[in-house]
Image 1 (cartoon, helix red, strand yellow):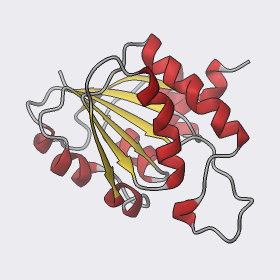
Image 2 (cartoon, one colour):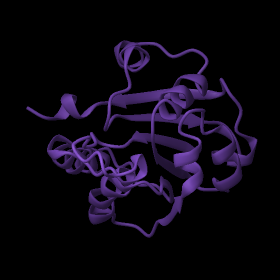
Image 3 (cartoon, one colour):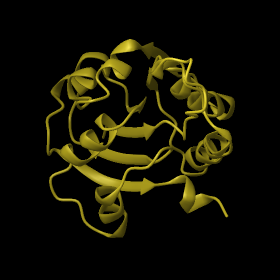
Image 4 (cartoon, helix red, strand yellow):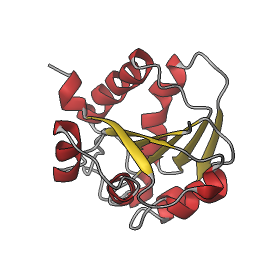
Length: 172
């Protein structure tokens, strides 16, 4: 059963007005949260076969701790399309680039990450689902399973919600 991990980049730094949006790095909170979320992925055995990561600075910085803990070979694609589609959803991106990856991770931006997570699931329930529908903060990760043979077959409202975790859930 293919699994999708939707990872919104960790908290970014707005203190450099001379930088473009795409150049913004993580702030100190994001730099602390990204490794915590990477450890969470490891603890939950959420190792992707394929990572589609936005080409922005903050998403690449979010990716680094994940790579440091990877125990398997993983294909990584840094794509401008993940950044450029950040105002929409990732349906076409995943259909186009997902292939037959068993576990696919998208490290992207809001609102596309939040819209995708909510629109891929028809009937989510429980406290984590309610939490995700309320707010999808920086650094949060949603996990959704699908009964499809290829990501090219991905459709809205066909996923089964598995979990939603925020950095605040892990950090004391």
